[in-house]
Image 1: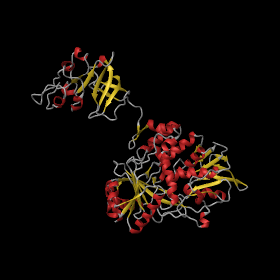
Image 2: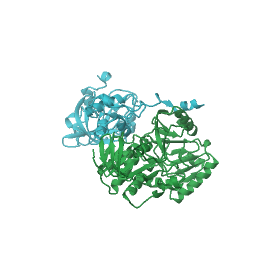
Image 3: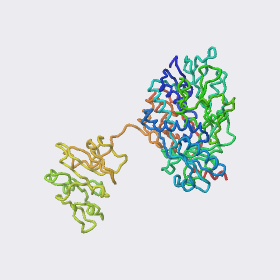
Image 4: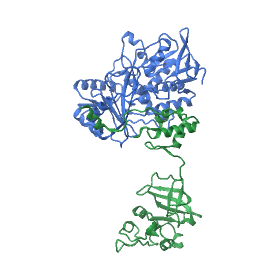
Length: 382
Length: 246
């Protein structure tokens, strides 16, 4: 194991792997990623892995636009011939009431102004793109053909493989027990495999971010909330679009392998880092999805699981340095879309840490916004 | 013999086998059809009119060796898989046999397969020269000229790899490749391979994969954790689940 490193990244999900890759790509050397379990063991490996550029805030539009462009060329850029299963079958947001329709029209106008070619579909157009839809439940749908979904395991592995090829080191099954500081500056990490001396640590531990931060008495305003998800047996392709609705509270996709993956927000979810199964989730999920896509009623559910959303007050990520500890950075608060933001997270953190010219307006995504009240509001999260 | 084993006698084979002279002129179909049954697609499908029209549907096919150009269309038409095309002019030492092959997966061009006789016994090895997709697919193999009366089927070389995960079709070779790449726990292999993600949800394959990990890494079986078991215990239709909310 490395005894010294220039940069130590804590967390082996998409964010950690992407930050490691972009650091090396931008000239950094001697970068280490620490993961207490295996790569993607946390939120990344548990997520729905939808990719969309249809948001209600300019910031999320810009971040996901960057990520989506990256994913389109990721197999070549990262050199991963096995493929990351990026299925750009379009992303359809169903609209079921008048208020939502008005908001959706505003969102589409914003997206179009940023070069995202989303559009409003009437129910007949929606039915053409998603034939299994029961349009009795909806008024309209927002749609963008370049959105879709991809395989979170393979995408993270692609970043990790590229990172290792470029000289980075990944230590899995390696837990962080302590952070060492000296005169208000980070100077080392204590792990289950020994000590690493470093003067830069990046905390991207998802739902566990504040546990790592607490090792040096820091805390950021996020909390981890359990979200549930289920998967069915694989069947022939019948759903190309990723379908989601805020008002009907669900998302559902058919992965290239044939399985359906679906989730919804449930009330009264624990915020204590538990990822146990919620027994009421499968029936509510099934009832929701069967009503909207009745053809799914004969497909069998195989498994349910849960993961953590690291929720920030304005549902936008936090990219910053901890105020009281020099050399200690954080990328967290992804609020349920950290996977699709992965490439943007990597780019932004590399720019921030290496002092590069910003390609994305990350100066507005720092911790100070929660004190000044300059938060960015986002309505479109399931 | 034919009635009991499905394998014709050498005399029966000789009775329909083309002459040396005809064989030296290029490819020709050989129809090993010895039982009068009501079946005539070979005769009606030949674009050369090389198979004499049947007077009775139970007639046996008779090839006109002058008209047959070895095109092979009749191979796909014969429901009994009784037709091959033999080309003795393929090379100095080897002949080309085109035969129907109904198994999946299809062999690759260049693959060395086992060449079988009519009873299915292994006789030699042969190189796959061409794979023509169709119903059924036609495989062209290059074989020793001395064996053209014997070889009538192929099978892939036996793999020593044993199936570990039936749902996701993974064998010991696949798993060893993941282990060699540094993925050394059940969960780490699962996320990239779909091992244990199918209908059995790891109930069948988990003990097998742990044993494989233990063998390859020379560690005790007890040192490996199975993946997390999660609901549902048994797969259930979404429609049935949905009824619980009403």
